[in-house]
Image 1 (spheres, rainbow, N blue to C red):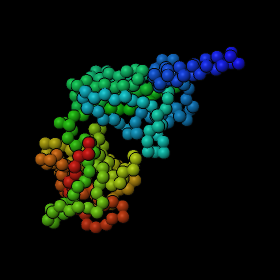
Image 2: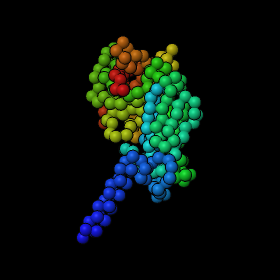
Image 3: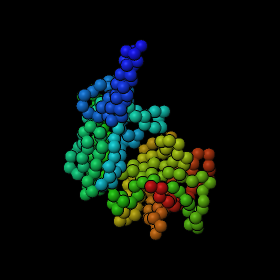
Image 4: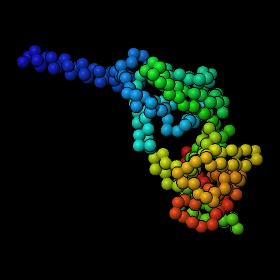
Length: 257
C-alpha cells in the first residue's frame, strides 16, 4: 500500500509539472521548437490569424497573434498548435518567432503594410494576415463610429432616426462596413472607402452585404466638427431592414474608438 501511494504521488506530481509547463508554453504549445501537437487536416485547413481580412495597428503598438478557427461564424476559437512566426518586411517592426508577439517601432510610417505568417508544424501549412499601419493624423476616419443624427434634405435640420446605425467602421486597409444592430461579427453591408482629406470628398462603394438598402448614396463630402464628430454631407447610408421613408441627405456620427 505504501509503495502504491508513493507511485500515485509520483504520477500526480508529473501531471502537475506538465500542466505547469503547458501553461508556460512547453507542453504542446503554439510556439516554435519541438512539435508535440499534431492537428487533424480539418482543423489545419481552417486555421486563421484574425476574423478580419487584415489587422490595423498604430506605430509603437504591440499585438500578440495566435492561431484559431472561426467558430459559429462569430468568434475566433484559439487552437493550440506548433508554429514558428515570421514577418515581412523586417524593417520598422519585429516579431517573436516563438510567441507571435508583433512590435511596431514608434517611427513606423503610416501606410506601411506587413505580413505576419505562422509556419504550422514545420511546413504543413502557412497562415498569414496583413497588418496595416496608420496614424490618427494621417487616417482620421479609421475606427468605429455611432450615428447620432440625420439631416433632412429640404431644411438641413437634424432628425433622430427611428433606428440608428450602431457601427460605421472604417478600416486602415481602405474598407468600410455599416451595421444597424451588431451581433458578434455580423455586418449589414461593406465595401471600399476612398476619401481625400484636403478636398473633404468621400466615396463609399458597396461590394457586398447581408442586407444592402436599395436607396443608398455613398458619394459626398465629410468633415470633423470641433467635438471630433463625423459629418457626412450628401451621403445617405440607407434605411435599416423593415423601415421605410424618404432618404436623408447626411449623417452625424460620434466616435466609439
